[in-house]
Structure formats: structure tokens, C-alpha cells
Image (cartoon, rainbow over all chains, first blue to last red; front, side, top):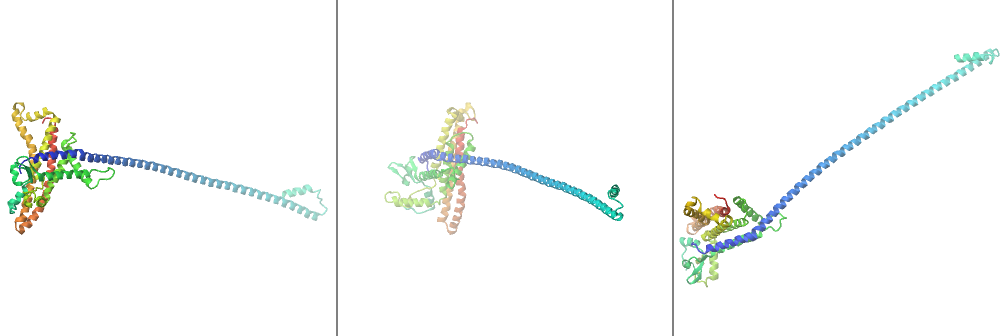
Length: 156
Length: 294
């Protein structure tokens, strides 16, 4: 257990191993570790960017969707309004038409009534004249009593 | 030369390195010639495990280099990257804004390598030495005189229980500290730091002695701390192992339990000491980069 040249030999061996480690072992490992570290941080950044883009797209999509919804409801409302309009138009037109028809029917009935009354009056006057002629025979001539007959007819 | 197995010889066997060095008769690894080798001797077992485990560290981390950055990391790659991140965090907290590309790889090497060396402590104490002894006896028992039996071949397994290894690393870090002190601060500032504190310029010799003690104590304490902790851990494993071989059956069973408990606790020491060595290495190098006066 005495100190001898082993000490010097070990010192030399030690320095040789340090040199090997310094030149051939440590740098490639450290370089690889740093490279991977960079790759990982790059990857994380890219993932964050992708996340942001996704969020942006989602917001845009939602905006678009709500726009479309609003537009659709507007269209539906317009269509509803239009339908109501059409129905009410048709209703009023039909009502007018019906009124017109009723009015014209009324008028026709009135005309017919008048006409019937006139006919009746004429027939009645001719019946009266005939009857009167039969009663009076030749006493009363149709020509002599025209004015009288006419007046009687008017009074009927 | 098969000696009888005694407590003393068992402990001695586990605490002796396989030492090869130059004797007056030439190079040899004979344990009985160690005293004649002087300074120019090498603990072959410590260096063997140290280099093997260092190579294992390099291999594992080379295999862990990410093949592509497109897929999620898995398996070995995760472990490697976890180590790198752990070391980077520590370097960041101790080094702050100073840019030096050597510090992190150095800290990584220190941490993982020392962790591997310390972990050898968890391999059962007899397993590898006995295996190595038998292999050496089979391979070289006939041709090499001093390998007379498997037991005569010493083979320590945990490099960090050898002060040469820990102080060797501390020494290398010490040299780096001086190098960065001079290149970053400039020689003038470095010398000023060693001589003008804490008593100002009229007591330069006193300052120098005090600062030198402080300066040299750092690497020595760094190396001895690791050595002391692991040596003590190893020693306790050896003593527990002795309970199995030299005690009665109840003591042997207790030994098993104790071994388990100590091994579990030692995992903490193993990792903690590797971490402390790394943290102090970074701290000392950070001090070498500090330019402002304290």
C-alpha cells in the first residue's frame, strides 16, 4: 500500500479518458440532446399554432352558422308574411266578388219582380178590359175609353 | 509456498496489490520482491480494473449516443442522457456563467468512472481474487516461479481502495487546476493569490506558507477522502467475510445478514463518494476560474 509509479500511470490514464470523453463521447450526446430539445419545443409551438388556427376556424364557422340561421329565419318569416298576404288578398277578393254577385243577384231579382209586376198589371188591365167589355159589350169602345183605361191601369 | 490460511494472512491477501516493478534482478511481479522495487513499481491489478472500467464507461456512453433525434429515447440512451443531465446540472450550479467545454466531460468521466470503480466493492470480496489466482496458476503456474499456488497470486479488485489510484486522479485534477489558474487568471494574479493573502504584502512568506498548505491540501484531501471511505468499506466486507470462514455456524449466518446490510448501505457510500469527488473536482476547477479577489 505504498505510493509508487501507479499514481503517475493512473494520472495519465485519467487524462486520456477525459480527453476521449471530451472529444468523442460528450459532444455528440449533448448535441443530440439539444437538437431533440429544439425539435420538441418546435413541435410544441407548432401544436399551439395549430390549436390557435383551429380555434379561429371554429369561431369563423360559428359566425357563419349563426349568419345562415338568421338568414334562414328571415326567409321563413318573409315566406310566412307572403302566404298570409296571399291568403288575405284572396279572401278579400272573394268577399268582394261575393258581394258583387249578391248585389247583381239582388238587382236581377228586383228587375224580375218589376217586370213581373208590369206584366201582371198589363194582364190584369187586359183582363179587366175584357171583363168590362164582356159586361158592357159594345157600350164602351176600346178607342173611346182608352184614356180612362190607362188611368185605371196606372192606379193598379 | 502454500501458507496456512489464518485471519492475518486472509486480510493481508485481500489488502495486497499485484505489484510489478523493477528490482536489481530485472522486472518481476513477485510479491516478496516488492520492497526492492522502490518507486518504479506498478499496481497492475488496480490499473487493470481502472482501465477496464474506464473503457467500459467510454463504450457504454458511445453506445448511448442517440442514433436519431426523431424518435423517443429509450433504454441505454435514457441512462446516458440522465447521467449527462445530472452532471450538467452540477456543473451549471457550481460553475455558473464561466464557459469551459472541458469541465462537463471531465466531471462526467470522474463521476461515472469512479462510480464503476467503487461498484467493484459490491462484488463479493473473494470471488474475483480467487478466480484470478486460479487462472494465473493454471496459465503461468509452471513457468513463473513465484506463482506456486493460486493463493500466492494477489489480485485486488477495487481500484479506489488503492491510494495510488485516487491520488493519481486528484493529482491530475491538481495539475489542471494550476493550468487553468495560470491561463485564466494570468500568472501574476495567480502568484498574487498565493502570496498576498491573508496578511497583505508585508508578510509574503507567511502568506505563501499558509496558502500553499491550503493549496496542496485540496488534492490530497480529495484523493484520500475517496480512498479512506472505500478502503474502510472494503475492510468491513473482509471482516464480515471472515465471520463466515472462521466463526461457528451461528456467527456465519449472522455474517450473511451483516454482509447484506453492509452491501445495501455501501451502495449509498459508493454513489455518494463518486458524487463528492465529482462535485469537489468541479468546485476546485471553478475556483481556478474565479478572477475576483476574495
